Each structure stands twice: as structure tokens, then as C-alpha cells.
Length: 166
Image 1 (cartoon, rainbow, N blue to C red):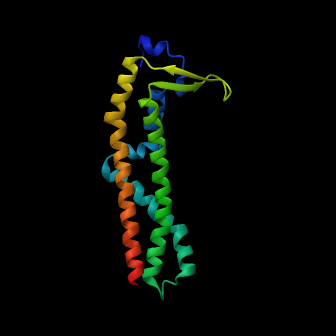
Image 2 (image 1 turned 90 degrees about the vertical axis):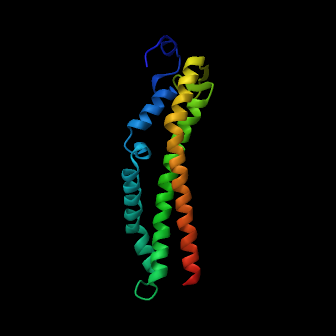
Image 3 (image 1 turned 90 degrees about the horizontal axis):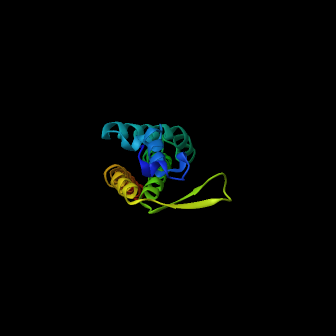
């Protein structure tokens, strides 16, 4: 974005919230949350399914599949859900950090290191642009991640109920 207010911005290029947002949208991992629903679900299913490589043998050590099949499946699914939950948490934290930077009226930045922190107040047109980006681009992503967390919690509760009945 090349306009007069951006050109006088003292914040280094990589620390400007609009550029941090662009980096997230371009990144391999964080762009998952922006993809269409089938692709998003497919990636999360791959994480969950791939996590069975670790959680399956751990569950089998405690619950022999030949004797305790239901407990083995629930324990393996729960263990794989931990990896999925951590993945979702990382996605959420990345997007919420950028949301907070875009919503903020002033930006804290560092010119050359941790010891020289500065603050820059955004002009009204940049603040408006950033808040529009949050409203129309980032909030839907965070809502999707929140709903996914809710579904994961629901599956955990179902797993607990199944565990108690078997």
C-alpha cells in the first residue's frame, strides 16, 4: 500500500500490522484457516489422522485392541485430538495477534533491537483500513477457529461419555 500516510510511517516494514497480516495470508500454515471449508477440514483431518501414528501405539500400550477395543479407540482419538487442539491453538494465536495489532490505535515497534521500543499512533485513514480488514477478513477466520474448537470440545465430551459407558 503506497500512500502518503504509509510512506511517513516510522514502523519497520516487517513490523507494520498490514504486512504482518499479509505474511500470515501468504504463509503455508496460517493460510489453512482461510481456505474453503472442504480444504480446511481435509487439512485438520490429516493432522488428526497423522497424530494416530503417535497416539495409537501409546493407547495400545495401555489398552490392548484385542481386549479393550472401545477404550483403545477413544484413547487414541483423544490423544490425536491433543495434537489437533495444539494446531488449532497455534492458528488462533497467530491470527488473534495480528487482529490485535490491526485494531490497536498505536503500534509498539522496535527499530533495531529489544532495547529501543517505540510507539507510533496510526492516522485515522490507516486505522479505518486496518479495522475494515479485521471486520471482513480476520474475524471470520477467528470465528471458524472458535467453532472448530467448540466441535473438538464436543467430541471430547462424547468421548468421555463413551468411556464411562464401556
